Length: 114
Length: 260
Image 1: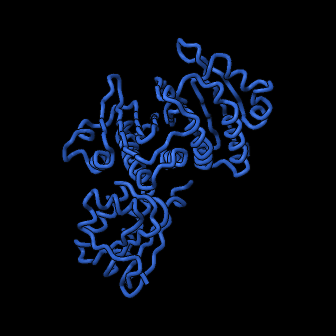
Image 2: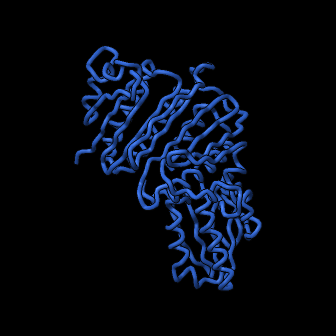
Image 3: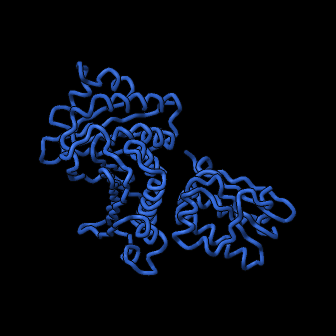
């Protein structure tokens, strides 16, 4: 399976908010895809960045690192940042690493995603 | 991803709870990441994964034969990074060991109260035997009890064939080979465990199965009543039998190529 099939990233913009919906697995192989997408000009210039993790079935520490780096960069440029809570495996990794405590976590039906 | 698919096969066979499977997959992925990131520098090298499933517990060993994993990665220090910390949190017990010659082992034991014994199963099937080194870039999986191997082999081969850009009809051939092996090989396994070695090149795949009883590997590929001969001859590109070290045990190697 190609990395592009392993992780699908859907990007949409609405009123200054960029929403990246991730579907599949975010791991050592696919993390560079997300890293590259997050660093694109349109994402960087948005006033808010939301990572929708609801359809992300698996994340490892390399994927988590990309999410954390995106959060730190967003903070540095004054951009709001939020993630959805994700699958049980995603929630578990966010919890045991303590990363979840630093992030704004929104509900799957939050108006930011509509 | 490959190892996670293998673990999903194991989980299905022993009816592992979904949350337990998530924890095991997460921890084992971190151990494999360490091998990919640190063990061999810019070169490729073998990755060995051993899975031992018993009622109530699943043990996994991830091993490399490189020299690059820094001691700090395995130590309980801040330098250890998220990966080892995740392993320690999710595994009931874990151990990081630098091998005498070269390489490292990460051993993890996971409590899995709902895990049952796969069928057929008996106490004497829990003894695990030694494994041999694999050539560079290969994946080697040792699994006990041996019947568990049949839960993972079809999906493992499919995943690897897809990764090696095999066509769909050739992947279907590979499934037929896996089914034939599942039907015929169990009677030829010596001992309680089965080692599966797989080397992958673009549109080329070699599957190695050991240890088999002396004389049985050859019997499997000749055109005999209990053999896989006609099917193997038609669907595989080449077959070979090798004797393992000083023992009489045998290895059966089947090469599959996707001609275009």
